[in-house]
Length: 227
Image (cartoon, rainbow, N blue to C red; front, side):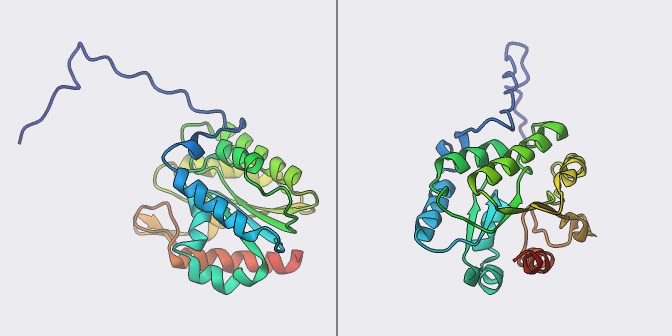
């Protein structure tokens, strides 16, 4: 087998590491980048909801977007009839969700409940910075939808940055006040299973159908209480 050494020569300078984007400053880099199609799909769902009641909005990244993909049967069973909007976009970090809340046409909606799960794609950032980004999205959600009650979800277990995200969860759970912000710790239900966690697929990041069923089972009692 031939092993190339062209990247190891002394005359080949390593590319400088890119400074991660701020977690709290809105960024369109996901909208204009390689995940533009996911953003356009989200815009189509928003357009479809215009003029209809929107009582429930799910805000987040590909794990949230997966409700209407891999988790579609669970979504149809639990939320399709409840005037729910899936406002999830693949690869979103906190700064991208902030941008979408500002630039996608959702301000006229008046959801009673927002279910927020964000932060798992902020892996280049520190736990404190990720938690600050989560708080910024939480506050932007409240600003965009006056009077909304927010269910803040824990970031789920994953193989790429599990310890970091657990540290984030330790901070973000303190944002709940059980008046207009509630914390739901789905992560604690996703117990280790082999080299992964219950409810996660082969990539050890995204939910299986079982994972979406677990989410619904934890979420529905709180929704019933709040609605």
